Length: 195
Image (cartoon, rainbow, N blue to C red; front, side, top):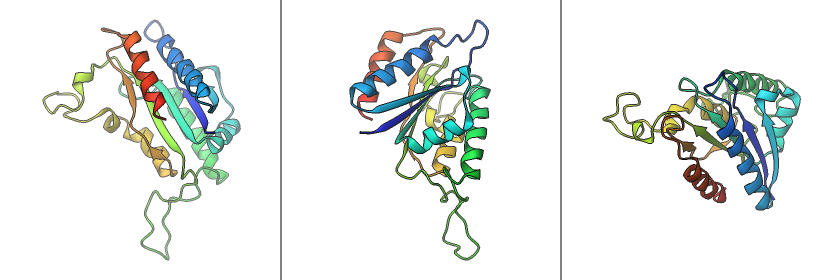
């Protein structure tokens, strides 16, 4: 059996983002993975969290999924706050990471190899206002051919720094101007089946 932590990083923001899609995808992942026999815990950041409990959930989990809307080309600020608090505590306790990996006696040790999360996997699931076409296309002005995974390297590198294997992300695109929730849900179910 695998242990899965799902972090719902949604943050309510006026009339623009009430969280319905991210809440739906969080519940879908929880239900689908439990049906596969996985043990699932969730963290809903907008409802508050205990830093110690979150560190221990990361230690417990084999797979960590962050479900988040994209606000101004990143996850909501509450998610960055969560990462800072949880990973600083995980470093202090030496539960998520012990060092940056380098030593003064062995120059072959690389920066980013001192983590304690080896064997764990990390997945981002995102909801975008941006259309799918703006990624992976050098003719598109904003991302200049970069992928969704390139756009979120700051988040994934945090987990990689601590030893996690980074899996390909999942995205729902164009959710405000041209939503296709029914199809997004079907695609997400297929995506989850591979975990």
